[in-house]
Image (cartoon, rainbow, N blue to C red; front, side):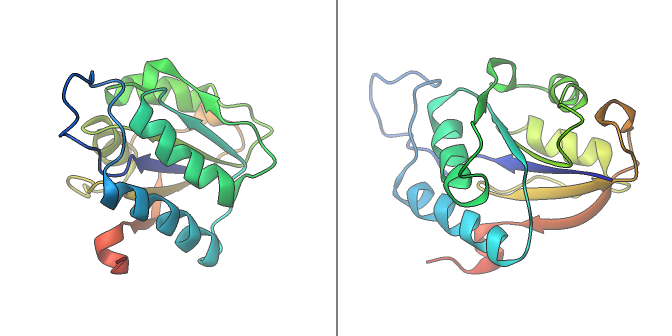
Length: 165
């Protein structure tokens, strides 16, 4: 069994003049939501073995909050190909996860995160909100064997659903 946590980064700050899209940081809400979502996932019993994140500033900030809580003893993998990736780019990252891991989190951007969850899930979830996490489970033992439409959506978590303040 393999489980993937597809995480869209937390809300970013669009009011930073002169800052490139790649370097854009989280806004105040994002700085609250990311650690709250990490704590919620942990309290809900979700377990993650490895986190792979886009190397854009806002994605890394979100991923580091997840790392602190979910994988404190594991190194975070930065993957540039996740920056503004389409679903087929994300699919390649997933298929290349080491088979030693049973549960991995991919932190990235929309529309790719929504696309990949909709690609793997048996039915569409629509558009993922900021700082949301779609959790899909696959009845396979090797990452390379997961296929379109064969994931079981076991969770779609996001701050508004949890009423984070």
